[in-house]
View 1: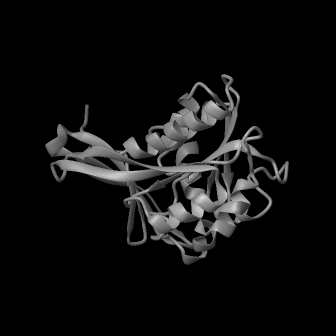
View 2 (view 1 turned 90 degrees about the vertical axis):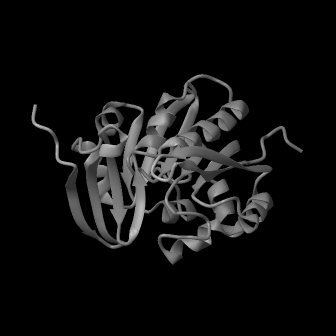
Length: 250
């Protein structure tokens, strides 16, 4: 069998946010491990080498939502940011998942999954519970919601993995979402007891925790660690989990 090249560009697109590149690399020091990477402009968005925090985002968010809404297959969930699909895949594997809407601003990212250019794509496409929506998560969150067929539809959990952190944004127009006023608009799209969970590449940020506390009944920031074989050390990111007041809360 012919060996794959050590570096291969699978797709290149011009987008409103800059040059978008999907590439595949073989990491010789890691026993020829094959990884997929996404580059947007000057930003290194993600790699399949590090997926622990993306998966923890789904696990922590849906565990909290399931506690408030018990029942297998009961949760209607939104994921903001498709990427390489690890947050969506973990959500589909959760026993409480009922339906999933995955919103991405970049149409090529959705096409990668539909065309099987990324490993998790075929499984997401073939799962009848999963639906991709091409759109701006932030406009939808601050507007009529995530389901065009049902404006104002509520969900049990919204999981977001787009910006690097609440203060390090891919675009300045996202800033309004992370203020208390923006978070209130999002909370309107959640059922009572619903959960908003967010991935951040930075340590917990006090101003954002304050904004969450103004809107939600509870909020926590969990630091998730994972090994970084490139630097031979532990790395860490943050998952924020905020729960809306339930009908029985006082």
